[in-house]
Amino acid sequence: MKGKAPAIVVITAAVAAGLAWPWFVATRSARATAVQTAPVNADYRLRDRRITFYEREVRRDPQDQIVLATLAGEHLQRFRETGDLADAMRARALGLRSLQIQRAGNVGAFNVLASADLAFHNFDEAQRAEEQAIEAFPFDDGARAQLASILMERGRYAQADRLLLHPRDVAPSITWLAVRARYNELAGNLSGARVELDRATARADQMLAISAYARSWFHMRSGQLAFEDGDGRAAEAQFVEALRIFPDSAAAHFGLAKLYRARGDWSHALLEATRSAQLYPLPATLAYQADAQRALGDERAAAQTDALIDAERRVFNAQGVNDREIALYYAQRRTHLDDALRMARADIAKRGDEIYADDAMAWILAAKGRWQEARTYSIRALRLGSQDPMLQYHAAVIAMHTGRTVR
Image (cartoon, rainbow, N blue to C red):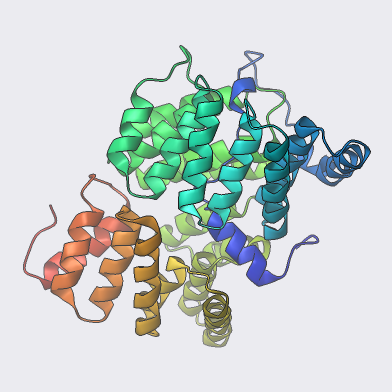
């Protein structure tokens, strides 16, 4: 890993950013400037230099709220690209300094603050910051879309849906389309989600100024939706394109690992899971790595990977950090189930009635043999109609053990 933070910091940051759902796009400039595909803007190669430049400008004029907000945005972008949580912390501090100088109309600083707070799973603060961004500039569809995304993270789907029904802009931004696609995905409308994401991805490919990370993210998300829809060929093509645009996309490597695992191609699944883990050693990625190692008969390597996951759990516990991916892996392995249940409860306490929090609780209760309780949470996890194969599988197993059918 190129100059990255210690593993535990990277893991926490990447989980918080949500490799499947990060925050990034500058929506007001998100307009196609050409019909043909634009060359890739490899801005990540200049990130350190840009940060150095704006740091120098801040020292020259500490009261320039615009430069402070710009520097905050640069740190936030480096956090997304490298997973270093220290950058998210710096972004938040700089955003607060900018807002202390000027709050009125300072949408950029509010957006940075919301994204940084989300990185720490401070959902109340993130929502409050995004609401303040809307108050500062009521016509900013980007802030309204990001608020809808936060509401989805908290299980407040009806509110998110209402926000997303009527964009103020005649031509919704790619951020708006991406967030709307996410809602449709959660609600089981995969075909609608894919159409919206494909529109957004095509527009992102036409933009000269969009960052390589953001452009890659759209292809990665298109790949995720294609995989969920059973379209393996399209999914593979999108993941490969995401890596061509931004080679350090841990999420795209992880997407390929899931695809190859589904095909039973354990050698390639291990290769891609390992590449993803080398960038961001997320518990979910390490779990795929361990499963592939076992499938290939390398029990010693799998045990070492399990030990790393367990070490992360102990550090997380000491730091008060919660990770439901570790909880789900323990449920799968039928180990540390009391710890897993604690993590699941903490996740629900922070997020509320969010479907993936409900699913994690259901699966852990099932692992403990508490099938009727698991059934209650499983029903809640599917209440929107999600077609996510993991949620569907968990629900089917739980239904079978309770003499019911999945509805």
